[in-house]
Amino acid sequence: MVTKFGVGRVVASGVSLMLVAGALYGQSPSVGQNDSAQIASAAAPAAGSATAQTKPHDNQFVIGNDDVLAIDVWNEKEITRSVPVRSDGKISLPLVGEVQATGRTPLQLEGDISERLRNYITTPQVTVIVEQINSQKFIIMGQITKPGTYSIPVAPTVMDAIAAAGGFRDFAKQTKIYILRQNPAGGESRIPFNYKEYIKGRNPGQNIKLEPHDTIVVP
Image 1 (cartoon, rainbow, N blue to C red):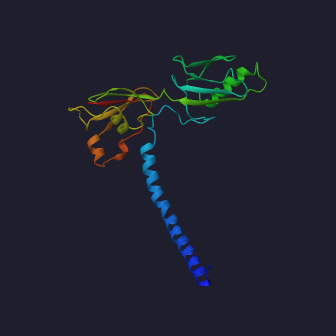
Image 2: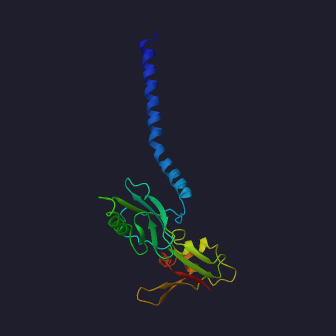
Image 3: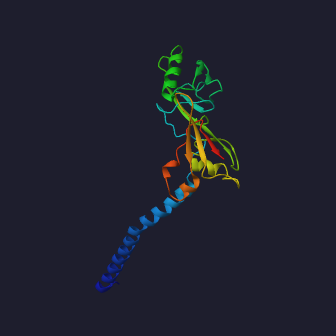
């Protein structure tokens, strides 16, 4: 039999345990957030994983050659599929035939496909998603370990590009790097990049985002 005194001790112990648990619970989020941030940083996929970030009805991304598109036509399994954009800029679909994809946004391409399908389907519902971005590439050349062509999603900035290409060779002129960029009106711009200056924290803005067809030259 538990006396009143005994009951009081049990209740007091229970309250103490609840207070301790509450204190521990209140502290745990800050620790968890730090750990989660470190894990997320370590586990985050490289920007260049082949998967695109493009969403349905995206009217900004412009499709290019070699991109892979997921075409979904509601209730039409024979047409729904993933297709690569050919070197001539076109894709081919049942009932639709060949249609221009390069230079179009996913939203525009949806409209083009829907228009052709109206000859066969009363109200076609078409969704176009960019599954893989393979058209956005740059070149890095010169005194670099692995010169070649790389995908911008893999290396979106100059520093990313240098890392992706394995770093410099022994006699690279690290203060004389430059980026050649095609101008819309024709010709090229030459954008300097001083690696030694950048790693010292000077002029961080020179680590620019790369654009399709940029060429990084490491003398």
